[in-house]
Amino acid sequence: MTMFGIRPEQGVRLTNIFATPWHVTDGAEVASAGERPRLGRPETYFTGSATPQVLHKLALEHHKIEFESWDRPLASARLWLFAVPSTQIVAVLSLDVDDELADTVDLLEDCFYADLKIDGRSLEEVAAELAGGTGGFFPERHQLAFSSQLPPETSDDLVKRVIYRGDLPEREEFSTITYPSELNRRPETTAAVGPYVSVLCGQPKYVEDGIFLSAVQGVASAARLREIRSVAYQAVEAFRGRDRGWQDTRERRRSLESLTDQLGDLELDLSYSVEATADLGMMVPSLRVAGYHDALYATMGLVGKAENVARMLERLARAIRAELTSIESLERRADEDRRLRWTVAVGFVSTVAIPVTLVLTFFGVNAREVDVRVSMFAGRYWGIYGLTVAVVGVGVGLLVGLYLRQRHEMRRDRR
Image 1 (cartoon, rainbow, N blue to C red):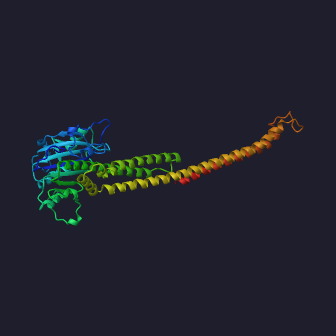
Image 2: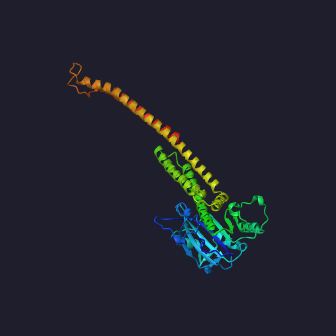
C-alpha cells in the first residue's frame, strides 16, 4: 500500500502537486491515521508538525474526467489537500493509468496546465470547493511520475522524454536533470529530478510516499518564497513612495516603524517557511528521501532564491535604519532649537522683569517724585512704558524669528 492505494505494478501513477492561495483555518483537523501515508519505519518522523499533513481526500469518478489532449481511459483518480507547517494548503491530483511511462507525455502536459474537466468543472473549482476557498492555483507546481523498473538500455532516453516532453536533439552538458545517487544506486531503480517533473521507477513503496511529501513541501516553499518576494517589493515601493516633503518627523517615523515590523515578519516567515524546510535530513533519517529532497531544492533553485530574498530584506532594513537615524538627528536638532528658544525667551523675560519691577516699585514708594494725585497712566510716564514695551517686543520678535528659522531648516532637510 502507498499513500494513494496500490499502484499498478505495470502501470504508471502521475501525482500532480499544485500550490494554492488557501490557508488552514484555526481548528482545522487533519485526516485520520488510516488516511495518512504508509512510510514504513520512517513514518514516526513524518507525523510531527514540521511535515505536511493530510486535510481532505476525494475519490473522483475517473470516467467523468476529460482532458485537452489525453484520450485514453484512467484506472483511478483522487484529489487530496495537504497542509504544510506554514498553514498553506497544497492540492494534489493523483492519476493511475494502465499504460507505459513513455505514453503519458500528453497526460503530463494536460495535468501540468490543469487542462482537464471533472464532470464539467475545472480542477481548480473542485479543489477550491473542497478547501472552502476561492481563486485558482499558484504558478508553482511539480509532477511525480511513478513507474515500475525501466529497461537499463532505454531508461535515460525515456526519462528525458518524460521530463522534457519531447525527443528533440540535445547537448547533455546543458541538462538540468539531477540524478540522486542513493535513489539510483541499485541497478533496478531509476530516479531523475527536474525543476517541474520527477521520474521515479522501481522504488520501494514507502520511499515513493516519502518523496511525495518532500515534493509537497518543496512546492509550498516555492510558492511562499514568491509571496515573500512580492511583499518585499511592495515594501520597497512604499519606502520609496513616501512623500517626505509633506510629512513631519512623527509621521515619517510611524511609517518607517510599520515597515520595520513588516520586514521582521517577512524575515521570520522566510526562515520558518523556506529556509528551515531545505534540510529534510535533520528530521527524517532516510538517505534516499533526504537525497531526493536535496536534489529537488537544488534543481528548483530554492536555496539560492531564498538567499537573494534574504539579501533584499536585509538591505531594505539597512535603508530604513539609515532613514530612522536621519529622523533621529532631525528630532535632536529640533529639540536643541526648542531648548534654545525657551532659554532665550526665559532669559529675556528675566531681563525685562528687572526694569518693569523697578518701574512698578518706583510708583509704589512714598517719595516727592511720586505724585499721588497723578495717575500712573498719565502721559508723562508714556516714555517709560514705551521703552518697556519695545524691549518686550524685541524679545517676542527674537522668539518668533528663531521658530521660523527652525521650520525653514526642517523643511530644507526633508527635501
